[in-house]
Image (cartoon, rainbow, N blue to C red; front, side, top):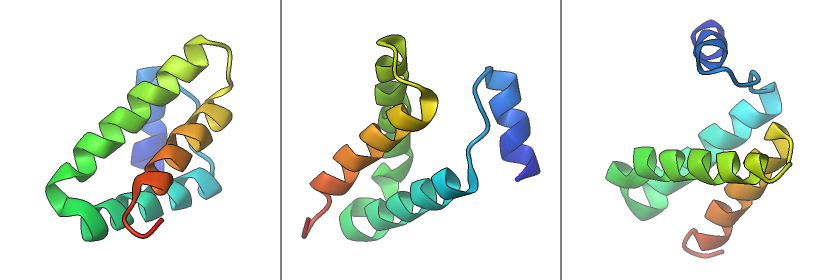
Length: 79
């Protein structure tokens, strides 16, 4: 995804893998439909903050993102 890759470069972070993109989009869709559409960008922001915090503690970007997304998935209705 050219625009997202460019944004990642501008932010100084690694590009997202195809698997990460798929998971982020799937989790975002579930938040929008199972919680509330309006909170989706807020949830995405919090995932980014949490991933950044984990990275500051030494986790690599992929592991940090996966851990943050797992927390969101655990909190979704029906989980």
